[in-house]
Image (cartoon, rainbow, N blue to C red; front, side):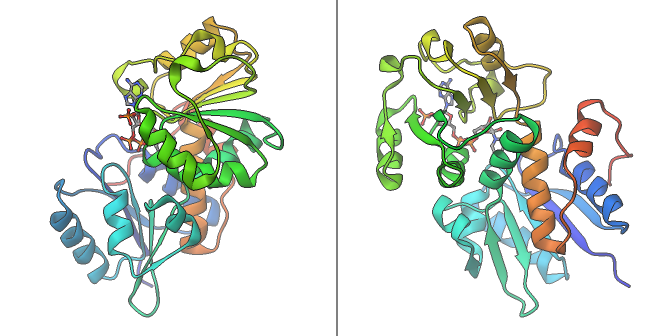
Length: 276
Ligand code: NDP
């Protein structure tokens, strides 16, 4: 039988933990899959060529990360509602008729991590979402569906306003934000560059959980700042990463991997050898 083939496309991509995550999922399923990292040049045509070559050779599915999520959405033949709402895709699925279907599992991944691994009840929770980029766009609808009462804030307020209007939620400029949020989610890329979004420290006063979608270090500048200013708990985005990957795996293979043990393995670096 041919080994099922998957990959993650991004640029840069060498740091990606997706191969390890999917190898652990395959182990749970009791099967073997090939899962590679593929770097594409940062232009629409090069990405389209790389995808065409990959799927033309019989691959089964792909994950797509920065900066290609919008391109992946555009070149797919079919789109899930989730991808449509986000206008971006992190998952491509090869259909039996040769077409490509786009989905977006980022929002499902965040909600899964908050509810299952951070013990957070989203129903009725007042949530402040910082950022208005691709990640924020993908998580608004799933957060609302889980019952969260959302306020959006972004460094460039006009972007937050435009996004908030689409989802009929509140948007506030950073400088007028105050306390009263149960959960504060950092969907900006600030932590990747050691930058704290310039929000007043008061936003963390009553905060039960300050969640940073960034991951990689033990803590982030956002998590540290939140703790110093009253947040009861913090979490990084590693759980979201694993949960969105699990949802991609389910879409590809019809098998739902258990996520807690994979998060634990990554956190404590109990990892299998990297997939070549
Ligand atoms: P984008 O480039 O699409 O958006 C970046 C956002 O960050 C914009 O809203 C931008 O604001 C804001 N921003 C950047 N720097 C600062 C700063 N110094 N202060 C305040 N705001 C800032 O990125 P993505 O939306 O794709 O990704 C955002 C984050 O989410 C990244 O850290 C990424 O790694 C993480 N992520 C994690 C996932 C996971 O599975 N854990 C999945 C997807 C993303 P402005 O509009 O003003 O420029």
